Amino acid sequence: MASILKVDALQGVTTAGSITVTSEGGSATVQMQQGLCKAWLQGNSDASTDDDFNIASGTDNGTGDYTYSFTANMNNNTHIATGMSSDNNAEIIHSNSRSTTSVNIKVKEGSDGSTAKDRAHAAAVHGDLA
Image 1: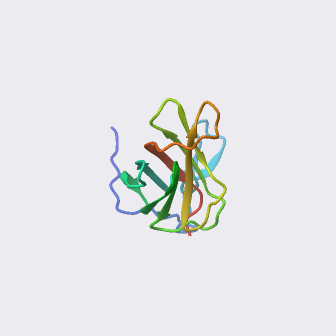
Image 2: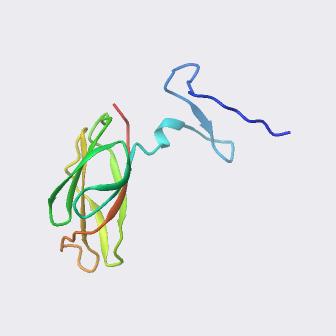
């Protein structure tokens, strides 16, 4: 018979914020909180969002250049963002101007990678929360 576990919070026994998960093969373990997406967004060409998680606001810095502020800050500026654009000819590029309070993403033309484009875009941020 299958079991159903219903809880409002999970906490590690040794450390409250640390829960270890065993891999599918059973030979490795990983800290669950390390693998969670810490912020994500579906943004428009004016830096507004249709949907998001842990995003307080967006700023349109110019053509294809967007900065999104976090609701809960990251622990350091080594987080990463991956994403995509809604146009087949555009690609999303995460710039090097990361900070603990925001992520900057740029959308550029896929054919040459140098022409900025205003496009709808989506991104997910991974890293450690403060």
